Image (cartoon, rainbow over all chains, first blue to last red):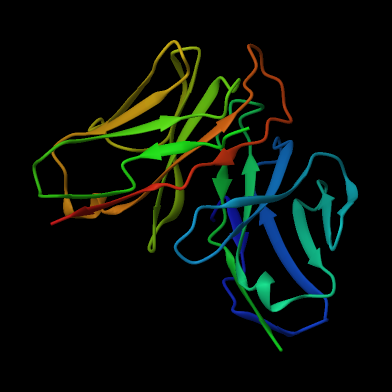
Length: 112
Length: 117
């Protein structure tokens, strides 16, 4: 079993819709969770970090964490074509030693 | 504040050679992590340095090594290059803590794209 799992996609949504991206992880001791966005040929860019159970909102983005279910999600409201990218879920099981375990990424395509 | 910088941005080497990549973290950041990204394996953790000490290491062979200098700049070295070492090598910096403090956030540099022929 992979440590961090994501659907590879592509996830195709129309402009203005809500995109829902999901991620599960295997290390129950993990305490830090991140969503990165990566455009083709570019490096990952931090979108959200979340550390506590529940929801965390930042603009059009909402991250949700459920540690009991070992599940992290990212909602993108009012999706725009510029949101088309690969979204990487990352988990730090090392307790602050900056060792991120990444999922394979979900490719999101927002069509006009 | 300037972001993470990596040099060189592109590199072509042949099998058997060695390569050194450089990373300058965000000013004030003391932790530097290195990752390898390939289409087949995705993003994989190589190692992390804090205060010139390697605190964490991923599952890579000993050909992959690194170091950190007193100004927090870091280098990674790959010896005896293999075709499979062709990848995007990413450096990420974070503030860094002396103890096991969670809630560190890593910021990535633009990467060095290495092609081994």
